[in-house]
Image (cartoon, rainbow, N blue to C red; front, side, top):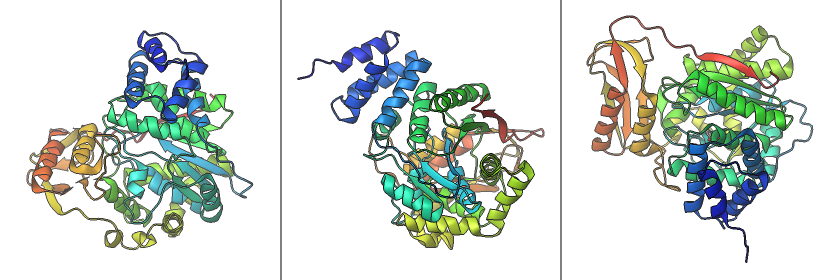
Length: 440
Ligand code: URA
């Protein structure tokens, strides 16, 4: 019988004292092995959120999470490798668009993603709305797919960062998400477990992000970049706008369908622009292209149809139905009922409470309330106007995709309440607040 008592670790943090690396490692190992209960781990997470973790404790937590599984190392692929991660947002389908664009540009994209967290959506949940698609790839499957297709998006698994898989789901269920050290350790454990030449971080700021201001987001970006530097890994972060949903679609299948329209080149907008900005930055860093050349090559990956074909190959390699790129709604699950959403006011859209919209989508069934809950891949919200756009009372601004009329009515009321309308003209917020370099 072990004499080690994990309650002592929680008590130390509860009392605002620093934990040493051994204590953090033992706690994380114990939880991952199932020896520390969910109740105790939830208390640990809340103590970390309220008391904070210093850089040494954050490093220890990240190390323990990486050490809970294997790491992915690539043999020479003949292409530089890149990983990209968002700290979480609403209608944030950037990975779905970025990964195939970057692959089409000659980069090898290897990415461990997350599930929905709090009010934010998760790339894994979105991808799994494609019938048959698996995200539980083994390290060997990731390596093989990246070599064959140029991109793979996979989940934490019993062999890859299992500690993050377990803690992430518990944080989602216990209101312990918005903490700089917990987010930094979670994001970076997944990035450090896969050895790529470059890590790109999309650190979101605004009402739909966990960090509500660009300053808070910059602090999170620096915490992530410090961890990368400690590992001797090249990383670059952008603080980007999440003061409104990035795309128009909020919900799993809806966001996949929207990503297909972007990859087909059918629509412009902020989702396309941000995915292109990350792809161009990666190509600049790894292929030595000038910013102008990199931006042109990224746009060409869409215009030529190559990015769309990469997405098809990635989906098929992961067991999914690749015809999703030809006709998304012939393949993706559709909600039982689709209701039009109409504006209740005239005026100019001044701001959006994107968290409220994310929560409304979650309440329709797109997100989880309890750990392990099943989600409904088909439900969600479509909201077209962006800050600065004019609204007209009675005009259609989007749709609610729901299981029942009652749940749709609740979501519609929430979405309209999340919009602030004014009379005067409103400047749209910048898409990228700024870049931070891991070398700074
Ligand atoms: N993405 C992650 O992987 N972890 C977080 O905590 C937040 C966003």
